[in-house]
Image 1: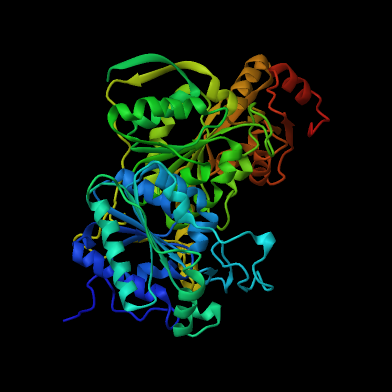
Image 2 (image 1 turned 90 degrees about the vertical axis):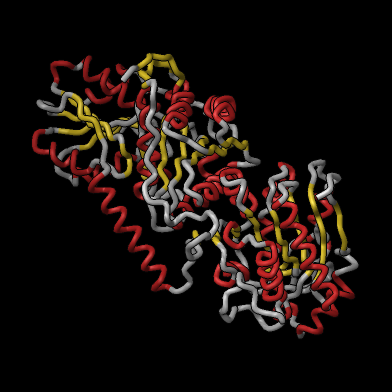
Length: 244
Length: 354
């Protein structure tokens, strides 16, 4: 019978109704429980709606500056290589201010796990444009729609897949039960690569922000299916040649 | 204890001092005039299986420091002025999260790109914050290669005792100077104290969270007050200074770093003129009481810095208008001769050469 995961605290969270964060937190908690790593996991919180992840997941956490998660996680992992270290980041944190840190952390092959929540907008600060915002998408800092002078939505995972260093890189989504299961499988695989000391791992979860997209949760899943996935294709972009 | 004398370059003395004090992790980025420091680290740390990462930027480096500090590691970064500017956000976080870490600044000419010649123009940045918010670095200013070596153990111990960032500042020329250093054959590692607050996996205890975000204003006020209370204790207990020839002095030079070395030379040259020196070793906490205690015997104070006048403001606060404070500054990365400084101060009607 389904039980609340041990690692998920019994606290009502602050996320908006239908927000993907709430769901992915639960998946991460289930994975940590199933892999039996709650007591040796250290999480690195983002700056964004999910800064409060440490209130919901019952593991040690640190709260570094915006975008610097992968660097802070490197400091932890290098010092305590037998612990499981993961970052949980949004599109501002990872694809905006933190682009340098994510690229170099992946390139050095730090044995970390990164959970990247891509919902095409800066939620916590009120719905501004993100590097992952779609062409034509209206946000509070692209009120006329993202146009030429704002460039195109950026695909970080494809950039990381170009690096020579081994890595596990996959993009998933949470728009229906089948995809939710795929997301959990990917997250579990990512942590398993770290447990086996194999390589850097990152899972990008195409998620929603009903509040700032000004859509209902069900409409937001539809929006992802029709508009976002063509720009951000799902699947495994890179996997280590060595078997896990 | 058996000691051996070796000739070291300032930058290397800092690196060796840190390693001998038990440095566990170094994260940094090359910048002149301190590249010898990171290079020494790169050669020596792997020999004892300690952690060295050349980060992609100064910003990444200070954040790697934050991560390792959260685990209770003796961790350090080093840079020079423009790179220290990049680290300010991270340093503010270190202070807000109450983490122990050592940051070394081998100061060069500024502002902006400036040059690679020596300067003391980062005094404000080091002692008045540098990063945002209500906090202070503990700031140590050695004035010899030997002191650069020995002060590193103090730096780590202060960082752990008070759970606060500690900055070690030296002007660029001190990084390049070569002097003898007496090294103990067996070094004691810097003490860490209580580590129950660190993150290392929550086995057998509640989760630890290293954070500085407190959305509720009364919660943040509580943190602020806790930190301020800590700083008041540091100001009482951790002031370090050197007094030289002060017993009968009527004139007192206040100078740190290379300027204090020149100051001693000036005192030798002015032997008949009752000149002494107060050398702050901690720039923060500043030796305010030490200066105040001498005011009754002094006619005037001479402050001498490689800047347009930064420490002189703290001297003036300590003096509080009781006696004249005269200032000589040198800019651009140049170091004046003793004669040049004496010439200025001998013109008794000149208060400030800037």
